[in-house]
Image (cartoon, rainbow, N blue to C red; front, side):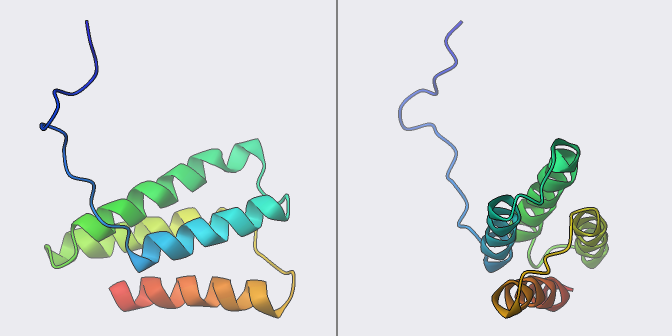
Length: 103
């Protein structure tokens, strides 16, 4: 059974939000510093899912957005903290600020 979509019937790809960009930059930095281990993969994927849902539901029901933000914050707290200098700390602070602005 073919799994390729019929040409012209693909779902549109939503734009990447600033939150998603910040999250991916944070994940890339954690990977570069070799701080992510296999047991962090579930938290990374949960962060990606929650950030994508927040981007899709911006302006939606406040209770849903608040719950997603809480889940994202909990998933982020499961990741190792970056302590590699001012640049890394500023990137982390920017991500946290973006999450708080989304609230």
